Image 1: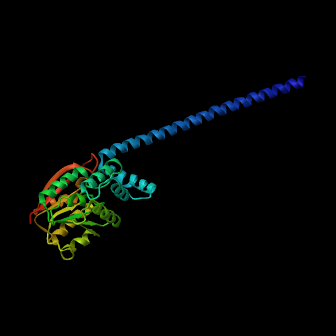
Image 2: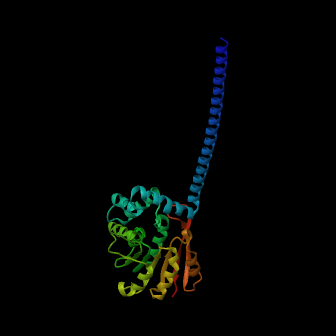
Image 3: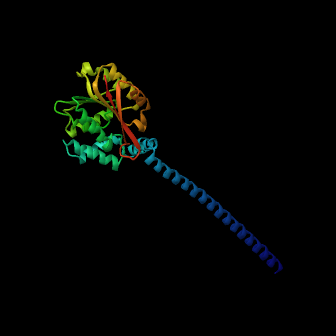
Length: 294
């Protein structure tokens, strides 16, 4: 009996010890889980804060807006859709705009870019500045550097008088192909000639190959670091006459400081600045008009 009692006591103590160990283990595990949860919550909080900060920056900072829309968001969407943003814009126009109606095409592009995906068209707000300038100049021969999807080409062409024409230059073959379809769908193909290739190669060919005497109006909306060398090249090739008007987009975002320094300090040009906003955003931007004085 004594042996049995001793065995029971030892067995009971072992059970108690095991329970105590198990309890401590549970407490330790719970603490670790709690600690892990706290770390996880902290990480989530930090990520949400960074995301919120980035959203604020996108609305106020041009560089952040371009990084988000042109690099991060566009690359992700292109990967998911297996299609370029420019092709999506064209498809939206083909499905929703009225064929042969340039205003309908412009409105449809603006709708897509303001509600679905941002794109680097001149846009509706700065488009009014472009419209006013084209109407004032009333050009017979106009040149656009940077066609992209054809938005501004359609915008300019719809305002040209009978017999006038626009030469638009695009370096990117994919953009050029999409712009060609956009221009044809808008019904302004008879007024627009799309030239594919680098601007520095095409500008010297304008006189002989494309029978251009001088240009009445030039819209600069391609790579910003090319604004200055291409403006100089236009002068060297004698393509500007007294009264020729240059209009440059995006002089604040992403910015063209070299061009502004050159054009504003050049006695051969008279400049006017038009404050505005980055296309489809509230980020400050501007356009610069420069009249060639000869």
